[in-house]
Image 1 (cartoon, rainbow, N blue to C red):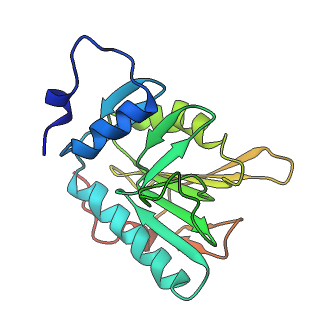
Image 2: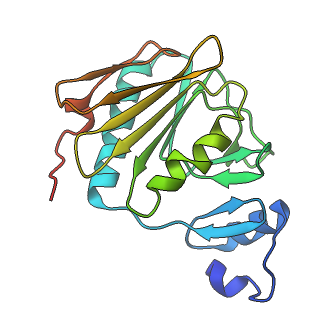
Length: 196
C-alpha cells in the first residue's frame, strides 16, 4: 500500500470527497477529511487505547443482545452538512447503521459519539468537530474523555434541542445516558489507567 503523503500531489490543496476516499483506500494511515482538506490522524497513547477499549467493553457487555451497534476507531463517519469524514473513537448506532455505499466502511447515523482527548486534538474535538456532530439529525450524546486525569464531559441533547453539559471528575461518579439505557462508572472507564 502507498502512504497517502506520497500519493497526494503536493500542488493540489483542495480535494473532493471522492478524491479523498480513493486516496484513503490506498493509505496505510488514517486521515480525516475536512471540507477539502486531508488531515493525517495522530497516533494514540496506551492510555488512549485502554480507555477506548474499556468503554467498548462496557458498552458491549450492556448491549450484547439489544439492537445497538458499537463501533470503534476504524469505522468512518460521513457528516454531509459540514463535508467531513472522521473516525470517532467510539460510536453507538441504534437499530441498523446507514451506510454511504456498499463498502460498509462509512456510516452516517450515530446517536452517541465518544472521543478520547489528546493534547493535539482536544480543542478541535470540543469545538469544530462537536459542531459538525450536532448537525447529524439523530445524534444525541457526546462524551469527551480526558486521558490525563479523571475527567469526562458528557453532553446530552434535551427535548428542546439544547445541549446539557455534565462534568464528571470523581472516580466514583457514574454517567447516566439519556438516549440509551446505560450508566457508565468512571471506575470502569479508567480501569487500569496510570496517569503520569
